[in-house]
Image 1 (cartoon, rainbow, N blue to C red):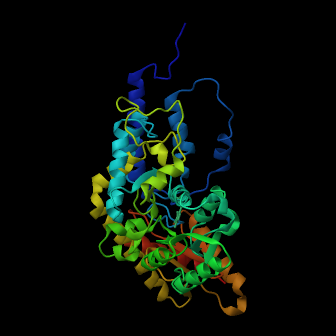
Image 2: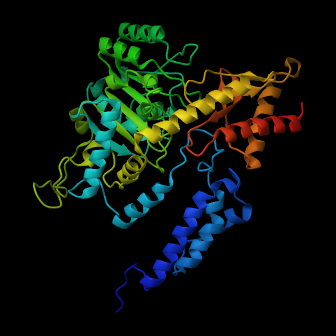
Image 3: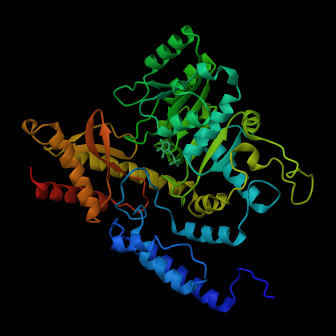
Length: 473
Ligand SMILES: *Cc1c(COP(=O)(O)O)cnc(C)c1O
């Protein structure tokens, strides 16, 4: 009888294929600029991706060439220096190496006693240091800020009686990320749990409006239990006044959570760090490593000051998961006690390698560089007579648009800007995205890419104008 394993029948041949692939991928990253920033997936390629469940084995080298032709060229585009859409990080070459180590070990970091656990603890200790959280705060790497916020708010809910869930209120600004609403929904809270607080002229949560909402809610017998501050909003990069929010939260005895998906990176540069002043007073912080910090997808994290509340929200016992003092089942506490996942990948290694390879100084320089590039773009826009800035740009996101004369109507302006963005994308020149700011559709350029140079910004600006002229109107 043949005892099947999934190992290569011929390791020498596997080694050759693997080496070739590695070489190819290094070139893929090295030469990213020679390819379009984005290109659509051709119909025939889409069709090939609908082939049915394979029963028979196929040759690995052939499959690798298939990936090279049908997958690699049609990436999101975010490793390209002129990708400015949404908030995407670019990843690093060292991330490729981390991914290989992780795949070889195939560790399950839900718990137990093995090296990956210690690497993740070390990485979380680094983030505690960065945010100035106490050493007994708990921390966990997760898929991203959406999960981080869910985990943090689950810990917060441990502090209030769940029977009162119909009266619970969480305050976030109108600019807060949709993941806050999602988290509350997943926690079983009704839609009324979220109180959307208006923003001021800088798109920051209005503190007087927040105070007023809380007072009103208390008068109605509701139970204010959380305030979510945004350290860098997705649409415009707006920053809530975290210090002021911390003060309101302390006075009202609520849980103060900070969504630092974007803002976490500013802590690495001395000239930007003040933008998130007050983050150290949060009860919990969720953040992304795969955005402005440049780690490969997917990885973000969550820190919770009250580690016990955090553990209570997620720990569960089962007879098949006993904890031991020694042996493989040691290593208490286990990460699975702090989040929804039991089996967890070794996300920590890519963060560890990234931060160790470059150090926070170089990572911070990249963040500051993006910030300066955004300021330069904003200057160019401000200097153009047919363009208008739509919002302040305190971080590295700039929202603006080409205006058309009033006589042609606002819909025409919206459509023009949409067409410019889509044309730039389809031609593979650059990938900005679209947003709506105070009812105006605008071009949104977000710079969170370590490969972007000032030349790319100038080129983007020139090419936008060129496309605008071609489109006429
Ligand atoms: C991207 C983003 C999120 C969600 O993060 P994911 O990593 O995509 O889950 C939350 N908040 C803000 C402000 C973001 O920009």
